[in-house]
Amino acid sequence: MTPYLAEARAWQESWDRQQETYLPDREHRFAALLDAADAVSGDGPLRLLDLAGGTGSISLRALARRPDAQVTVVDLDPVLLTIAEASLSGRAAIVTADLNRPDWTAALPHRGYDAVLTATALHWLDGPRLASLYREIHDTLRPGGVFANADHMPSDALPTLTTRLTERARQRRAARHAAGAAQSWAGWWEQAAADPTLGPLVEKRRQIYPTGHSPEWTPPASWHLDALRAAGFSEVGVLWRNGGDAAVAAVA
Ligand SMILES: C[S@@+](CC[C@H](N)C(=O)[O-])C[C@H]1O[C@@H](n2cnc3c(N)ncnc32)[C@H](O)[C@@H]1O
Image (cartoon, rainbow, N blue to C red; front, side, top):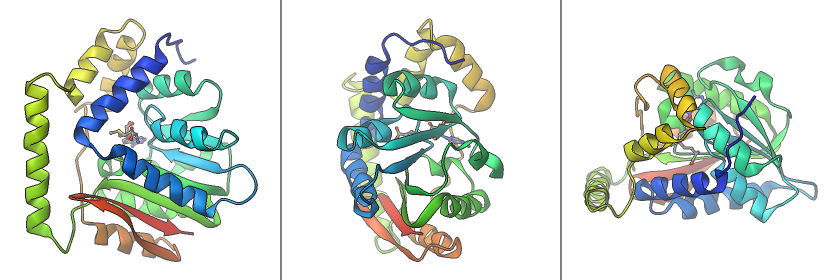
């Protein structure tokens, strides 16, 4: 059973602030993903899968736009899912599943989603696994449904400029962390470890993600577009881009 977290909204907010130090345009990319979901939805409630959704940031924004949306959050992290469950408070199905396993779809409460959205997450998987995952995502969507993935995806056309933009952003971020203007990834996890409810879950998380992070496999957007085409999507393209990050979208 998920433990009760009294200050879920505060934890949700601090996660968002911490992520924004790495992704200053985070709200813009979320808006691009949610617009794509809106664009394909019909008259009924939007059926949305927030893949590797963490604390449910995308789900909360989807529900703010569409209070009747049927939302599923899938993730493996017990800390982030506890925050998601408490801050979404019964408005979303929370599913613990490992996207490295092809059977992750077995636990989903629906089939035929209108939209599968994911952000800053699939670089945790390696190339062969991600290519397979794209096929599995295709099969969770209804025909005409949309998948969108916003992540670190260097530009094929501007490799040198992208590297410089990424380095400039890294320097700015390091200065903000050094000055205490923003919280770092490591600092956020230290704070969570000190919380009486989240602390034991941080320990559990260490067993799941022993290195604490990901392999950081970040191929260019063209790799994703090729893999999405091979996965059976009928339309694929870049939906949004800023510097070294992009969102690719694909219609099932
Ligand atoms: C940087 S967080 C992003 C979370 C959320 N999408 C957001 O934008 O706030 C990356 C997420 O990917 C999830 N993730 C990584 N590998 C996973 C896997 N194999 N199965 C399920 N979730 C995974 C992590 O647990 C984490 O919640």
